[in-house]
Length: 479
Image (cartoon, rainbow, N blue to C red; front, side, top):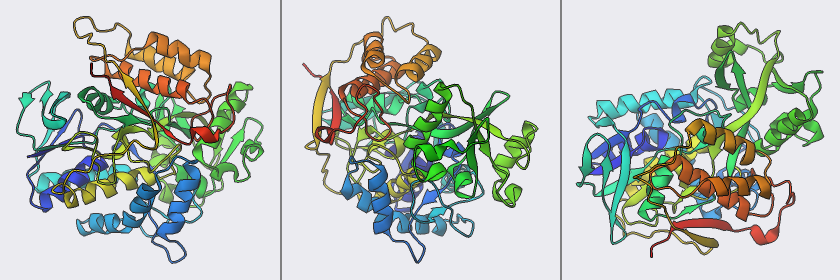
């Protein structure tokens, strides 16, 4: 039996692909419609137009990744994008006609389904899984069972020990909800990363957290104002109607996300407000029905009103280190999607490469599950061994909401040693609290990396340093 932990695009596409290939598969997930896929707005970046190519897509990905992309992975994912899309379509999914442009891309290459592509794909894959008879069970995995560096099973809160797992696939998402301002759902607190780390798997790039620049919050309802809005003509302005983003980058609204997030955040620190101006988008209701419905719920008219926005934690570039097969450093334990660090995103993810990564790794998993295990290499970085503290008898009383506030203030868009050191003195590598463990590792990695690169910005080290063109790895210390 192959168990898949998680129910986003990576987990469900892997489950369907494995089932069609003849494997016995079960999906276990803390919350079936939790995670990021059901609320993902933009689309899937793939080179299919006549003036585009996987090579150009790879160049864009590497440029935005700011020196830390794994080039082999980038080539693999961009080349396999068309096959993954064709596979999804062969299962019955239909994209809309045309391609959209998003920030950081040199070509129109974003395939979409309305303006809630992730939600459309999630619902399709979930129904497909159920149609194929794949069990999709809501339960929480609390521990992985590993012996001789090989996965032997896992433990769930509801079912106890599961010991018939030949292979386990982690597809549990990231940890962007560990920040006070976020575009993600409460399930995204890094539990899959914590599970893998405690079991002995190697984590990497934990300091690279992408902040989406344009997140709205009207009457308490948070909503991601999709990147494609800016690709279709939306502008970002201050309270005086000035398009200030060109002061920070010549591409203005279409600059990479890390630059836009810092620009908007820095303007806010100066006392300005930021708004999205949607008035130049033609046929708005038809192009963006989900955004339109959100605005109507809050009595906003896209042809008249400016929509207040701010940056928010959105996506984690790092995670459980894997190769292009999705293999971790533990035999028969795979990690795919946002929980993993394949090296595709480097120091900063190119827009709409996240759904692409999840789909490619999920669809292609059947090709690799019978091959001899290769595992990962750590030759491109430095390994830090961390002793996990067994505090199960007296777990920390630090509430999640306080952690989220601390992370936003000290591990957010602009960092320095004083703030990061504050976190590493409060947090610790807890065995029973994944939110504290993951926050600790992210803060520690951010403190170790004494430079600014991609979406990691240190005001005390504002420049990129060539000596840091390497990864920071973490593994559990075994005495």
